[in-house]
Image 1 (cartoon, rainbow, N blue to C red):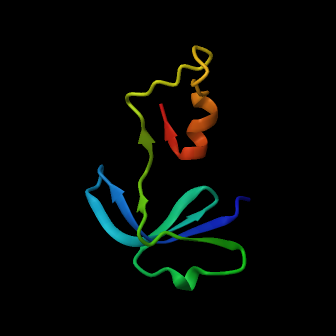
Image 2 (image 1 turned 30 degrees about the vertical axis):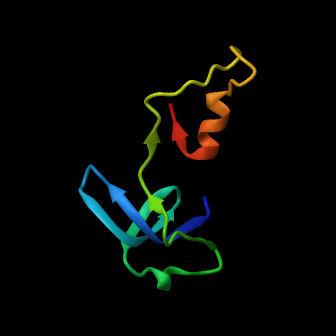
Amino acid sequence: MTPSLLVRGGRVIDPASGFDAATDILVRDGRIAAIAPDLAAEERADVRVVEAAGALVVPGLVDLHTHAYWGGTQLGVNADKIGPRTGVTT
């Protein structure tokens, strides 16, 4: 079982539904279990809390124009290694 996660107070943007507001998101077993303005009652010892006030929370980001140059130059980066760390995929 995956630990639960509470992302609190972030600006949630979901273009597919048009949702754009500061709210909380509770994730249980790798799936969104609740989205509501105040999920503080969900806090328990087994819930990891991320304070996201002032941050954006989005479903996912795709970099449509990247120059990774993996193996091409000394400045190149491995997109498969750096992408997951930054939350952006190519």
